[in-house]
Length: 111
Image 1 (cartoon, rainbow, N blue to C red):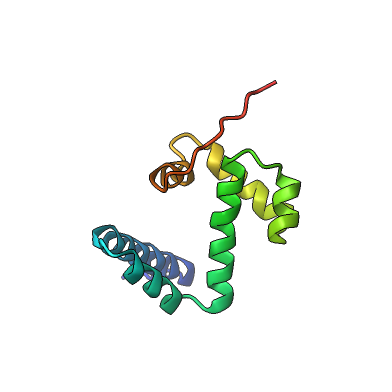
Image 2 (spheres, rainbow, N blue to C red):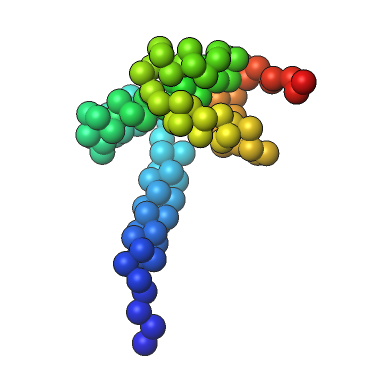
């Protein structure tokens, strides 16, 4: 019998449960229910962190400079850079979710 490592078990739990939650959320046509669910599942500090990450992605999409976002949201440049990289990925989930939220994504021109 092959034994799974703790990290493999943890990843399997995370993957399975994220998939399940995502599937359920996708079926819900009640934003207040989803909001209440998110506030129930996250601690206050986790909810604050998630909300700030969404705010930073919206700010990046609008073309706001990273240093301004860091100052405004009191976040590290490291978190903002990570958000920026995710936003630039082909087929970016961030970008797709922003579009679904009605956020205009400003495409930056390369010099």
